[in-house]
Image (cartoon, rainbow, N blue to C red):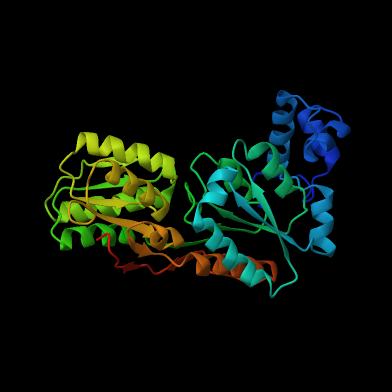
Length: 341
């Protein structure tokens, strides 16, 4: 999937020596950068990576793999910390779907959690040829290096990636519609001072759910200013809910952009003496196990997370088998009514 634009008269398969000349370093230095050695300065690493990008260089190990055999491995890349990954049931559902599909193939799954700097290790690992393709979930706007890697190897995104390119392949739900559905439920049961706790606004899913909320309240002729942003964690939602209630004490309806965050919101409502749903109704998003494990079962927007993971893996396997696949794959959501609304 490597592009040829900008290569001019260069050979179609750049060598390690060509990268070394372009970066004005030794062949051994390029090899150290490609293999992730820490014994390289940040300045030299930047120069070598710039040369690799300019020449569209693929390390020999990857070139041999593409020419003769596959590695038999697929990477699941999650640009989040371990607390977020292991604490959010959304990820468990995605992984369950991925492994369900890979169980019928010859591929193994490598999990890569890359919180701090996906450029330095994760992307270099992906480019080294030790995996045949990658699945990426929880992609943030600043993770440009992962988007760049998608130009060089088969990759499928879980959720629409930020700054999407025409050839990006992803599986998602219509999060605008989902946000509208959640908010419209609150309006349908008579709530008129409605707010939302969003996810981080460097992620398209969070932006789209907020957009759906705002469309629904605008259609109803209501204010859309009761908005606070969190980070899809319980702690973040607790802080955001406290801020929102301090600012909008007459809030009577709350859409929270994930079930996990909604459990944090419910704990704040209890500490403030607000009864759910009589004083304030709450709607979550995901229909994850968190929705039914909370003290008050959550009305929520169901997204088929396990099926999304299955489809992601299936699309990648089809790409690796040489098939053409659709680039935009949107799955349906639906409202699940429970006690909170």
